[in-house]
Length: 312
Image (cartoon, rainbow, N blue to C red):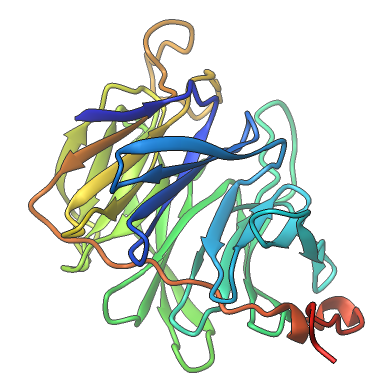
């Protein structure tokens, strides 16, 4: 396990590898920092400060699509972000992690988890390439990592507080999902399942918050191995590198105690995290899809169509 960068992230999340440029992006969603690691020069820099990014994907038209507590946004990478949706089907878009499918649609879960009191349940949502939004499912405590199987017939979706990774049948043509079932139920004495990645063999890699590890599950939900990390709050993992066999792992330095901590977990002592790690593994990952949302086609929530610069 090698440290790639250590900016002392309060909550490092959502590493995304861009194969075309051999660049890794990731976010500190609590510290509101957005980073870039250039593999060719082995250097890291801060791309943006002050912008909350809980999840993101590269967008085919340039820039990024971003999910955060205020909604879903388009950001060109330099100017101010443009709000796509603050509500979908009258449901508030207080969004956490996200992913994209081969057609360029965005999938994300809303999250209202409050360890100190009652809270409403979140929803699984989809944003199509024209910006139209759809609620796909509901009833989640702490929506988190998502990913697709290599055959694109299954969508995986994490509910951290419920300690579950769900699987859905996924229709690549329509983008719809159905037949939710529990693929993984993480035991109470382990960490919480957080961000996830899927390798080319169809195995799911789930970072464990409070668990100091990344767990690998087979397509039937059985844990196949466990890779230890130095960070108690290991938050997310993705594949990258020239051969797509490098596992990049984020972590979080600010202790976040919750009632769903495993028994005996000490939230006051130890190294919680804050660094970005990498580790070579004997498996290849899947390339991450980009969204295909174009500013010229946005029509969500009845908003007027907005023209791109230079469009007549």
